[in-house]
Image (cartoon, rainbow, N blue to C red; front, side):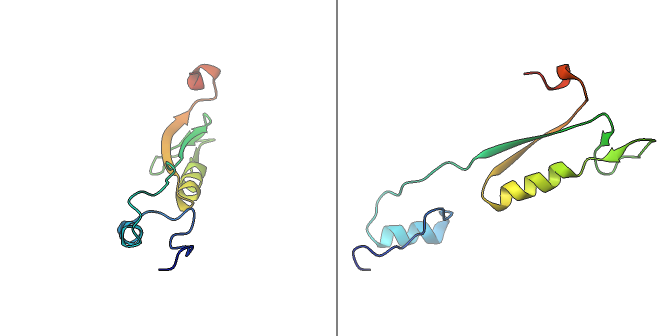
Length: 93
């Protein structure tokens, strides 16, 4: 390697190969950032989990799965908080 060579691009996941490359270039430490955590909560009295028996005016809660997959595809961790009813007290901290 030559001085100034970029061996690991910013934002790369530090997998075993990346850590080995850094060590082979005599870098005992690398700067890192913690993966973000995205908390996902679906809201609606009409929502049910996939696999549920649907009643009148009910739908499957599907958007949370798409949001989780999108977050994970860019390196975030996704935390599913489930479904909350359409009441303020259901989502109050």
